[in-house]
Amino acid sequence: MFIRTSAKSFLLGAVSAVALISAAHAADVVQPVEEAAGFNWSGAYVGIGGGFGASVHKFSVPGLGFNGLGGNGVFGELTAGYDYVVSERFLLGGFIDANLSNIGPSLSIAGGDVDLTNSYGFDVGLRAGYLLNPNTLGYVLGGYTWQHFKLDGSGAAEGLEFSQNRSGYVLGVGMETVLRGNWTLKTEYRYADYGDKSVLDLGGASLDVEPSTHTFHVAANYRFGAQNGGGTSFAAPAYDWTGFYIGGALGAGTMVHDLNLNLGLGGSGELNGIGGEGVFGEASVGYDHDFGSWVAGVQLDARYSGIQTKLDLGPVSIKGDADYGFDALARIGAKVNESTLAYVLGGYSWQHFDLHAEAPGGSADIYDWGSSGFSIGGGLETAVSSNMTVGLEYRYSQYQKEDFGLGGILEDTPSFQTVRLGAKYKFN
Image (tube, rainbow, N blue to C red; front, side, top):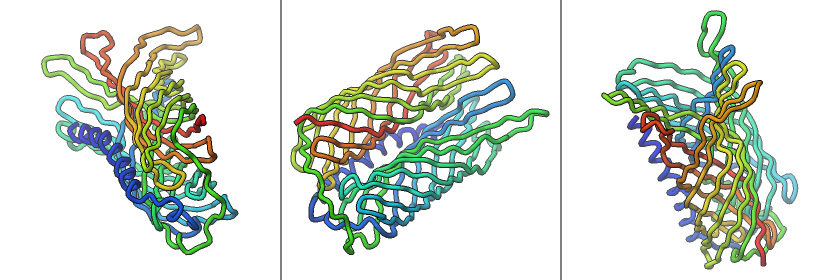
């Protein structure tokens, strides 16, 4: 569990560190018009980066389905690709990525630790992009993914080992913006599904497992020939970041319930954790102030979510919903070029959780609670007109421990990793 706890702490620190480094670098290199002018998006590129993510393993046997086991983690990544601008604002390209990861759930009990990780893999895909302005590309992607999953035991569980290679599909959305010279900064969300496959023969039946991952990528790309002419010719919108705004976003992500069982007399265990996934919608209001190279602001978000964990027992389903919540956040960012802001954020979060059962004859509430916590994250936001921006943002959220009224016997610490794609309208 020390390894898993260290990874979790690293996750919290790293998301802030990566975004702060990007913002600090951006503040040093802001030369908007000169640096971005004539940037040629066509050509080959290589990149290095990493990110954060979570996995959800869905289990099923005849008459029973569980969605699922889940865990958080981090990864590193190398990228190579080629893009071609087919018209003034449209781009097509291909890429290949290789990754190393510790994303996955873990179990600690009776002096033994068991970790199930997405240890290494690669993605090969295509992407189609649209230049939101001359400096920033918005795109979607899809393709093939391959991943090596590994189950490892240590301590009292030493010798427990299992591994399996899986292939599947990956879908995603991203933004890439000009930094300086031939360099760009990329932020990206990917969802990968590795299919339903048997892992154990139960004698006439089988235990099937379907893994999926949600990952957020931050990378720096070096684009060969980006300054050799042939760049875009349309003008960037004039945008003043100071003012009040309203916004809306659609997002996706995971939740992980870190469970602690405390039986006394040395009997305890930790499962990190019970996982769920889903999508959500969000509305926001806020205010930003432009300080020149920097922008600072505050915002209030409210969301309704379909992120859920589910256990099917024949005709009965037990569901754990994270159905609604809100955030009160502050953010600070640096203008990486004429039209685009790279920023970090953090603040207070509140989330409602609802555990209930559904059967053909009706439904019954089991337990529901609200929990306070914090969120940290970062993203890119770019102007598409004098009043409108679009952005892609990652957040890690963690909430207070809940003991379900059992005097500390069973405690749950929920956390979320979410990505949202949003638009804002700023009032003059």
